[in-house]
Amino acid sequence: MALFGALFLALLAGAHAELPGCKIRITSKALELVKQEGLRFLEQELETITIPDLRGSEGHFYYNISEVKVTELQLTSSELQFHPEQELVLQITNASLGLRFRRQLLYWFFYDGGYINASAEGMSIHTALQLSRDPTGQIKVSNISCQASVSRIHVAFGGTFKKVYDLLSTFITSGMRFLLNQQICPVLHYAGRVLLNSLLDTVPVRSPVDEFVGIDYSLLKDPAATASNLDMDFRGAFFPLTEANWSLPNLAVEPQLQEEERMVYVAFSEFFFDSAMESYFRAGVLQLSLVGNKVPQDLDVLLRASYFGSIVLQNPAVIDSPLKLELRVTEPPRCTIKPSGTTISVTASVTISLVPPDQPEVQLSSMTMDARLSAKMAFQGKALHMKLDLRKFRIYSNQSALESLALIPLQTPLKAMLQIGVMPILNERTNKGVQIPLPEGIDFVREVVKNHVGFLTIGADLHFAKGLREVIEKYRPTDARDPQAPSTPPLSTVAA
Image 1: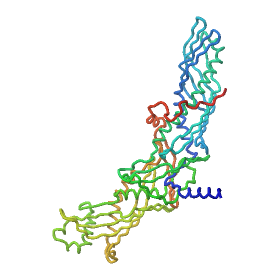
Image 2: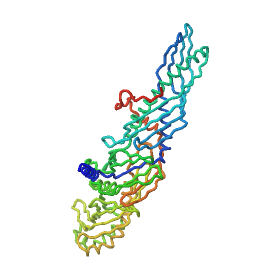
Image 3: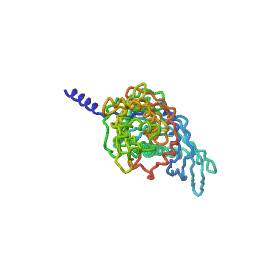
Image 4: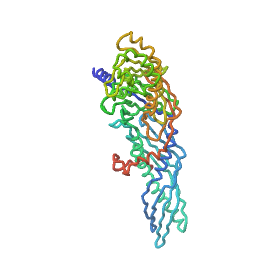
């Protein structure tokens, strides 16, 4: 019974789990590009290592090694992989560091000093980053494990006390190797927990799209990794800025990602687009009014001819008044995604009136318009753009079937008016695009769109429009320490 109850609760929890409107898969094809950009950043971070002074004595000899600086880093072998438990694992082997330091030697009353070069060879680093969802829905580096070691240090001593240095080199190089081993992992810990998180903070969570609506890209759960990809589920829901707490229930099909040929795949369900259109509907912006000379002249003539009987029955002072054509969407548009394409269904009221100066409007007709728009999706940078095209159009009267027959001559000119006057306005708005949840500096290129039943996927490759260093420096915290990090960063696991 206990097992049955646990299964029932698990099924109940699954039934109430929120479905994602947007999914992103990063495949192993992207890892080489990410690794190359990441290693350039890592090289610069490791060059900031500061090694404490090394002092000691052996008999009557006293030595002091100070001002140790990393001059160069050579990474000859590295590998970046997805791991099911720790999402990203970086393995560096057989690397080397160039070092420069100041030496000071005192033997009885004799002193020797100066600067000298050295090299740390056989350096190995194994670090793993764990990604998770924070309470706000932001993706974060939540944990870092690190193991690092340097197998040997070579120092070419010279000068008057060369033989003495050679005798003491074992003490000096062993001490320098120990200190160097202790500095590598704290640098990587800071780079991950502070600097990479400052980069991930540029991924939008809840942000405005324009002056009317916003987009919610909260992560619904922690990222999930396999050996070949990293999957992330986002809420992918729009909302009116005036109703920030409003949300549309997600009853759409959950997007599925199966492909792994491109660097990244993004999937959008019908809910993603439905929530956008309903948000604009609730914001009250899905309406258009054309008055006077804004009504195309040919359409103005046709409308006056069609409603000539109604016009001549008006007060003579009203007959020559400007025409007003008003379109108002009466219910939220809906998106339908099929393998054959994406369509948006719109129902609107069309009202035709005379607008005499300083007098109430005189309504000539009110009708209903049903339209179907085709939608084509594309990425530009990391923004999703939509281009709309009018495919089907029908108007009918709200009063009678006879009046609907009388409206047939208006079908063609009204459709032309929509294509010439309305569609460019819509496309100007949709062409502004909406940002996809990727960090600053990373764009999509060479995208391929594929439609499915209830959702569409876009496969693309990644491109670093800005260097990782450039973006991180822009958002680097002024505090040199991670406020959430422990007081003592985890040290390397070093050889005895």
